[in-house]
Image 1: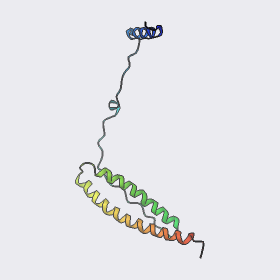
Image 2: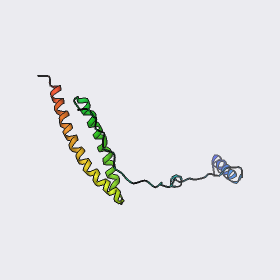
Image 3: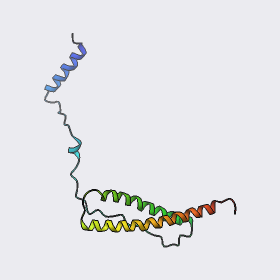
Image 4: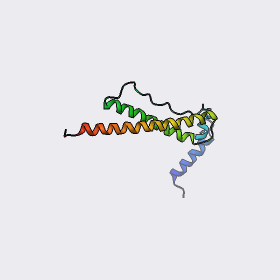
Length: 129
């Protein structure tokens, strides 16, 4: 025996399906909703960090300089990962080689800055004179 509630639910659904006033449900897939990819320009490296004109006398100036270098390194890592996928134009290849040279120079500067900042911190944080 079919329970009355189940019978009413099923008969109500079938009656609703036959009713022309009932709106139809449209199913959308995620791939249909995504727009076509726009063509991108050439893949270029991030710009070099701007070096301040000051002499970096205070630890704050040195720390800000190091922070700018870290932002460059993070952007450079993203650029490197993006570049290693796919093929590129000769201009992009030339820019990539220049980026690698600039990256090594910036890394050497950042290492020196890091050691200077560490030495300054050790000297200034010492309780003893």
